[in-house]
Image (cartoon, rainbow, N blue to C red):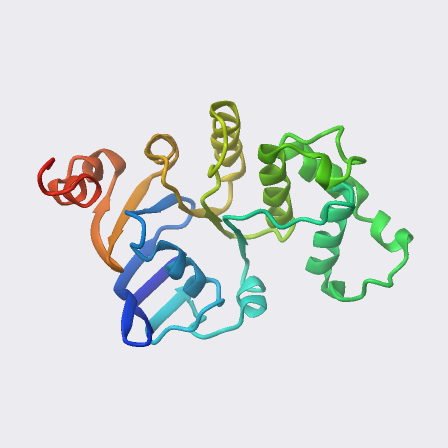
Length: 246
C-alpha cells in the first residue's frame, strides 16, 4: 500500500529524514516510533505532501505520488490526523462531518450550498459519529467536547474521506488512561478494509495495535519488525535509554 525508497529531506544542510526505505503491507497497522527528533513527523509530512522530498520516491497503491500537493495525495485515498486538534468550536459535530463529506463529493469549497444539500449526508454523518463513539452528540458544538472526544471527532472527519490509507499522528497524545483505551479499541474497529500508519510514543499502544513497527533514529531506519522483536533489539534499547542503561 505504501512504499518509500531512499526518501530524504534536508533543511539548510541538516538531513531530518535520511534514505528511508519503508514498505507498509495492505490491511496492516504499522507504527513509526523513535526518540524525540528522530524524524517521525517530518516523514509523515513527506508522505502527505506537506513537505517535498529532497530525494527519493513515495508510492501509494502502486502510484508514484512523490512531490504531489496534500489535496492531490488525499484524492489517492489518503487521510491524516494531526498531533494538535484543529476544529471549529462553534460548529456542531454534525456540521463538521457533513462538511467533510461534502468535500469528498467535490463540492468542498462551495460553502454557500444550502443546508438542504448538506442534509443528504445526514445518515452517513450519524453512522460515522456512531463509529467513533459520539452517537447522540451530533447537536453539540465541538468546543464543548472533552479532549478525547475531540480526537474521536477528528478521526470521524478522516474517515469521511473513505481512505484506504489512514495516517494517525500521535492519536493518543495527551489522553488519560480511559481515553487511550477507547482510542485503541476504536482504531481496532475502523481498521477493516484499510491500512493504518501511526506515529505513537506510547509503547503499550504500539504493542496492542500494530502488526509491524519501524524504529527511526536521526532520520534513519534503525530497526523494523514485529513489536516483540523490535522492543528487545539492543539498538532500540540503546536509542531510547542510553548506552549506559543498555
